[in-house]
Image (cartoon, rainbow, N blue to C red; front, side, top):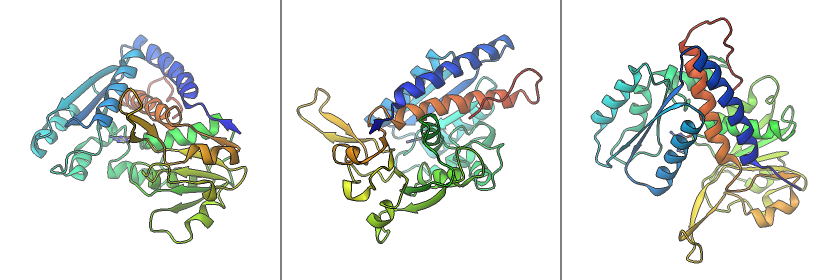
Length: 302
Ligand code: GUN
């Protein structure tokens, strides 16, 4: 059994990103990312800070807007519109989930699709479904695909079972792996909390991707001997014995499942760091695209 080291793979991608940022700097361009967070949910805050810190480390221009929980829909939309018009900003991310009084769909639709590095805007969702490579693909699905590719896992022709149907992970991941071409061409099945015969289906997976948002949901009985398991879940479980008062667990019962697998991602240190690596890569891509056709500057591989 191999433990897939997402941290190490993300570090290698960051090195590539750093070089791309340096190349762009020669042309007087600095990729800029704006991250917006409403309220003070501790997990969201920690993600937003990690995104901001890594962007800065890699030489991107990073702007973090941490707004009060009570921020109105109009205030948030006005901020997004201002960022749409800001030439120093190439990518805009509004951290999900927002507080309950915010209409998230309307916010997503306010973001300029060319700056939608999350890939959540309907125009980008449509492009993914239409196999149009000019859109942005959500970062976590991209991170899962890249983890598999970098770990030498054959995706073409494999039966991938995606557990979870969210707009952030499950649905776009299914579309991404269904695409034609290298690192895709999978046979994809999507299952969720209401699926019948769930265990039977997940047991038929060559690659099982757990993104259901329930701590340690996937048990040994869900997994075929020799399967590859990717754990997208990041759940905080109270743990008085831990210094922070909680510990992070995935959607997979790692201890029970790992011995059965050919390869598995840990939590933390698996998919999480890859999501940020793909966010940086999408932001660089948005910056390059904003230059229009430009000899000597290639579009980086997503
Ligand atoms: N919340 C959890 N994952 C994500 C993500 O990829 N983007 C945004 N905007 N919010 C998230």
